[in-house]
Length: 236
Ligand SMILES: Nc1ncnc2c1ncn2[C@@H]1O[C@H](COP(=O)(O)OP(=O)(O)O)[C@@H](O)[C@H]1O
Ligand SMILES: [Mg+2]
Image 1: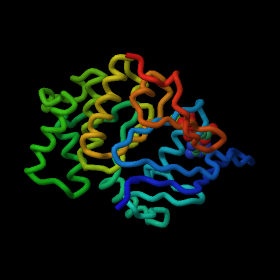
Image 2: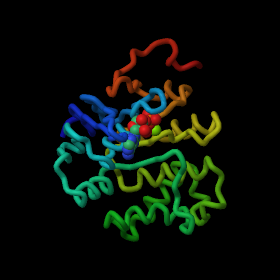
Image 3: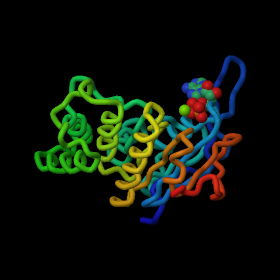
C-alpha cells in the first residue's frame, strides 16, 4: 500500500436548481498522504462541503473515482460505502453532534459497536484517546455538562476511535474562539502525526493554516494547491 490514503480522480458534481444545472465540482483531482494535514479554503458556496462529502463517501459524484485505502469505492453499494465510512473514515463537523443522552465514553463506544469492533479491551483505547484530547476526567459526563471546546475535543476523540485512515473535518473551529481553535487543530495534527493518519480540514479560519502541511483553494470547481508564502508562515 502506497503513501496516499485518499485519492479523487476527475470528479464531477452538479446540482439541479429549477431548470438550471449548477456544476459545482468540475474535473477535480486530489490526494492526501499519510501523516499529512491538508486545509481547504475558498469562498462560501464554492463547493468545499460538496468536495468533502464526496471525499468522505457521504455523497456520490456524477463522474470520477474515489479511492479509499487503495479501493475504488465509486461503484460500491450503499451498504459497502457505509462500511467504508465506519471502518476507514472519521468525521468532525462544525458542531460536535454528540448524542445528548450518552456519556462521553459512550459516544466513543457507540462508534465501535456500530462498526462491530466493540470488546471490553477497547475500554483502554477509549481512555487513552480521551486522555490524548484532555477529556479523560470527563468520561462520565453528558454533553450538556461540557463547554463548546470540550464537546469538540470529544468529537475529535470520537472521529479517531475507529482507527480511520482519513479524518474529514468541515469547519471544525467555526463555533470556537481563536485560542480554542488553534488548540483543536494542534490536537488533530498531533494525532495525525503520531498515528500516521491523514486529515482534510475545510476552513475559513486563516489563523490555522500555518498548522497545516498543505493548503488548497476551491476555485471554479477545482482544488488548487497554494504556494507557501509569507502569509501562511508560522509567526513565532
Ligand atoms: N444537495 C444540494 N442540492 C442542491 N444544491 C446544493 C446541494 N448541496 C450544495 N449545493 C449547492 O452547491 C454549492 C456549493 O455548496 P457547498 O459545497 O456547501 O459550498 P461551501 O461549503 O464551499 O460553502 C452552493 O451553491 C449550494 O447551494
Ligand atoms: Mg460548507
